[in-house]
Length: 89
Image 1 (cartoon, rainbow, N blue to C red):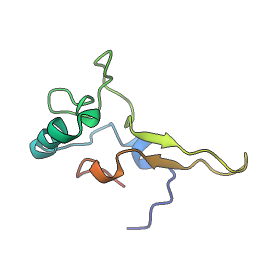
Image 2 (cartoon, rainbow, N blue to C red):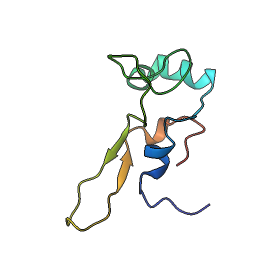
Image 3 (cartoon, rainbow, N blue to C red):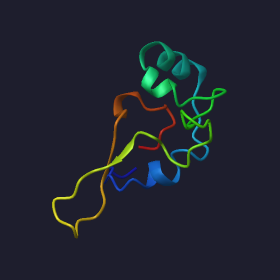
Image 4 (cartoon, rainbow, N blue to C red):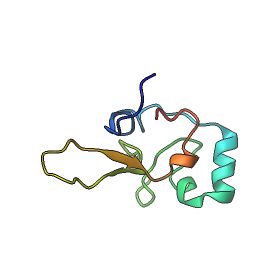
């Protein structure tokens, strides 16, 4: 496996598609990470907190600011230490 270059492809293309989690993770989020748990619905990831609609990408991926306009897009994860076990990063 190669090192992450923060291109965001894993999280923007695959981060909501079929990403799976387990009951232990969901229960942990419910107890200690409600900011993550609010995006869980019927034990599945990621749903809009207002509409309940399935999101097309992980809600915790953030486009980093660029130093120069010509720089490639780079992304960071706001829940890096608490991502689902199957998270592809």
